[in-house]
Image 1 (cartoon, rainbow, N blue to C red):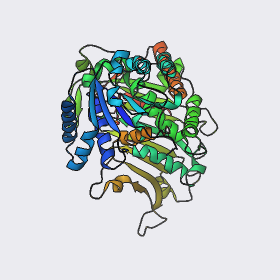
Image 2: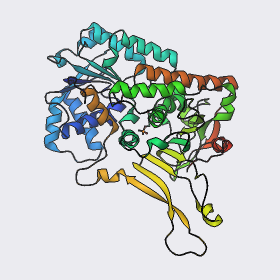
Image 3: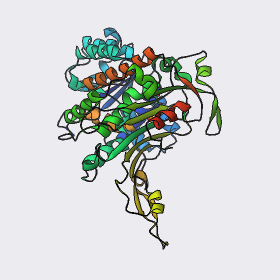
Length: 487
Ligand code: BG6
């Protein structure tokens, strides 16, 4: 952890909203249970609605109970004592000023904006004008930071008028996931992979983020964004960066983020011709997911829509390390299973010394990194099948597994919410796992190119049945380049 002062109060904007209830309040509670919340840190929930402190505390307790985990009553009493609530419209300086009494004595408050990005600029300005936020404050923002490069720049510019970049923490919750951080350890805490981690040994990389959930009631947001802007611009490009970046000099925030920006700037721009050749858009129709009937996106939306709920792309990185190595990315809603996975496919052996029959069994090495639902890292290696055979040896492919399930074994062990890691880091001022302004803007610049190419080529989403792996074109896409999705 860097040697920066700890935050001494946490203000949650949108404290009664979905993100706070599902992720932020439980994460703060679990941090407190494990002794990670500095003593004396207050947690002030705020939202427009009037609510007494007692009613807010009750809501938080209900949220924790709903997670069906046993609550340690002593820990709860300690946590509840930290909680406060202020009903305020924080988009105005008068509203923001209402937070003052709850923050009395706090010199380094952390403001978590779990609210619509369209309000970021106004809330920051109001906090500043009211004298609630100052030099010691930290501000945490959720995605989406804009809908394209232009709107993202507007938000960033509004924030930078008030806060220094070192005070701004842009969250991509994928960076808080255990296996995502493990990817950094795997690559840079071992000598094994680095000499092979390039176009000489790697044939291609696949990144899949599949969800069984549909869009449902979130359509008013989603219909403006689609899978490209909702998932690919942020989570998937972040995963790609961590796979593709050069070794940073150290784990200082800017060392890591400098390397990620270089990857983003090396992404080959999409052209109109690439739209049909290297990308597929899809939108789910009705179908069956995990044995349950699922409605079509347009039924949820209530009318026809041109937004994609599935996207598959071939991405090229134009630099020395990755020249000629395609990265295939796909993400979709209403897929047959929840799966977040990175597959690093190595090249086959250059020459087989085994007889024809055995050569047939030869499978190229593959590193499979599972992020969800299981956290697992598997390296498939060839070995000799046990036993005697006539005329040569039989080969078989076997996984070498680094199952992270063990991490969660034992009494009291549990899988952490990604936000726990991220909140702890903001409290300590460590920005390594947060996205810097130039990173967000470089990602948008590339994604805008894809959206423009689609618009120019008139590429419309193709239908796919809920519960399938996307439109047939997604298979044709990867096959066109001589590879297959690992399903
Ligand atoms: C969010 C997207 O950022 O990530 C959602 O807006 C998506 O559409 C979610 O469902 C997926 O997160 P996770 O952690 O469940 O993979």
